[in-house]
Image 1 (cartoon, rainbow, N blue to C red):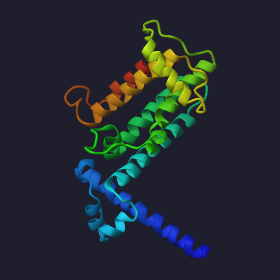
Image 2 (cartoon, one colour):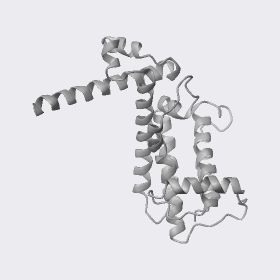
Image 3 (cartoon, one colour):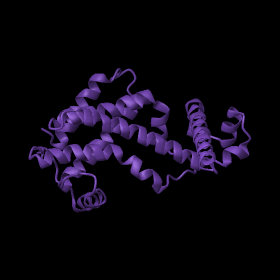
Image 4 (cartoon, rainbow, N blue to C red):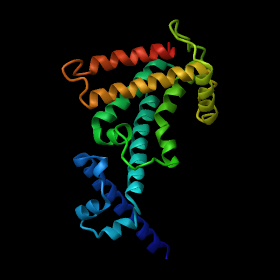
Amino acid sequence: MSAIRTARERARAELTREIKEEARRALAASGAHDLSLRAVARALGMASSAVYRYFPSRDELLTALIIDAYDALGHDVETADGAAPPGDFRARWRAACGAVRDWARRTPHEYALVYGSPVPGYQAPEATIGSAARVPVVLLRIAGAAHAAGELTVPAAARPPGDRLVGQARRVAERLTDVGTLGLPYDAIVRIATVWTQLFGLIGFELFGHLANTFDPADELFAYSVEQMADAVGLP
């Protein structure tokens, strides 16, 4: 009985993988807006009713693809950070930011799925939050390690955040007590939030052609911006 169940589980896992792979091909061809379970089923030579047994709705399939994308990106960034010298906080920062860009350029349609235009009618569930947080958590950990080492500074040009921003940063810190932010000051968390959005904004501009005929290719602009972001955070 156990062997039968294991074989069924393997078959289910394989078919789930095939459905998601076909859905990714559909994303590349026509974007998330036009994703259809029926079209995925047709491409796989399956009855649509069979696909619905694995993903009862388009939204559930989208959620699975979104979580996979966030996790793939998070894995790459965590691996890049882990490969850098632990005490060289700026090298870790460069590695983490570079891993985001590399993943985005390698998988532009998945990047667009999670950081592009919202899909009409789709509301991401809470199940996506943990995976989505993996990249900012790495950035927070790098700054947290620098702070614990006494090497995180407040840049001379830094503007103190207002009370409302501090309150939001406090809530972030409370949610992340178990991820090694190492007692980061609230103003540092605000600075990291600022550069986190700048990082993804710059990558989005590059990926979606907004730098054409200006800073294209964007290698030098990206490298310069990463250093500016590290300065803004207060990394040594």
